[in-house]
Structures are given as structure tokens and as C-alpha cells.
Image (cartoon, rainbow, N blue to C red):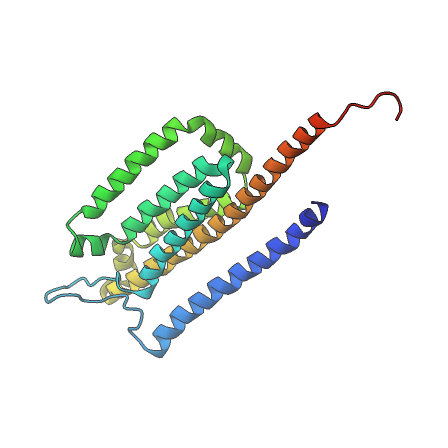
Length: 242
């Protein structure tokens, strides 16, 4: 156990270096594709005759985002299955990841399924999450106090701040109209918005991975402590000095 604890800082350093290299590689790949072949990222694609706005929903940048959320959801499912004490948090966060993934796919659900179908799905999942969290509020609080503050939850919070606060303001169309004036092109606004949003999802993914490591460490400690107490109860009590 001591050796494992001593190695943990080095393992964390390796993980963070891998995060840096991974994000750097994907970002470089996306930008290199667009530079080498303009239009590859499809940040403004006109999908039908008379479409004056265009959409970025077919862009690899947009497609990566729900993919990240699906990975996060799978990690939360693993935590819920293997780390019982963290199940309330994992279940809630996994549900939120599912909601945000559906929100990212709203364009396709509206176009190929039914208008506002994504809102219907989100309403169902949100209702179930609220009911579950309310019923499990005591266990949720206990689980939360065991992991907060932590690097994983901090990164998840940072990613959420970028996605739901910063990008909503910086990606606001009137802002770019004011900045660019007569030179305004919607593709510029879309590019800035989607790349910033992608950075927030990257932080969310890293935070989820770190939270998974922490939940696993908690789960590994719990059985050992219980087993030690059980063994101590079975040992005969010594009398005297020996």
C-alpha cells in the first residue's frame, strides 16, 4: 500500500502528460486538415436549397463532442457498477452526460426523427435524474463530501463553465457582427464557438477520467478496511505482556 501511494504522484504526472499530448495531437490534426484542404472541417455547410445560414453540425469538431460525452457516460457507468459508495454521483453525472449528448445531436434528431424530439428525451431523463437525486440526496451528499474538492471534479466544473457560460457569450453572433462589422462572416463565429466548446469538453473528459481514478481508489480502500476490522475481531485477545 505504501509503495502504491508513493507511486501515485508519478502516475498522475504521466496521465497529465498524456492529456497534454492527446489534446495537442487532436487539435493539431483538426487544424492541419483545414489548412491543407480548406473546407474539410465543414464548419459552415449548406444542407438544402435556400439555406442562407449553414450549419456546423456535420463538422468533425461537432461530431467529436458527443463522442466525448459518450465516453464520459461509459466511465460514469463503470463507477456506478464498481464503486458503490460513489454510485449516486456517477449516476447523476452520467445522466447529465447523456442529456448533453442528446443536446449536441438536436439537429439530427429534429431533421431525421421529429421536431423537438430531443427536448422530449431530455425531459424524460431530467425527470428521472431529479427524482433519483432527491431520493438519494443523503447518499449523494456523503459521496460528494468524500471527493470534493478534487482535481477531477474541479476540471469537470471548469469544462462546464467554458461550455455553458464562456462559449455562450463569446460565441454570441451580435458580438462578432460588432467586431467584424462589414467583414462579418458567420463561419468565423462558428469556428471560434466550436473550438472553444471542444476545449471545454476536453476538460470535462479529463475531469471524468480523474474522478474515475479517485472513485476506484476509494472503492479499493473500503473493502480492505472492512476486512481488517473483521480479522481483528476474530483474533484472540492477548493477556499480559505477551
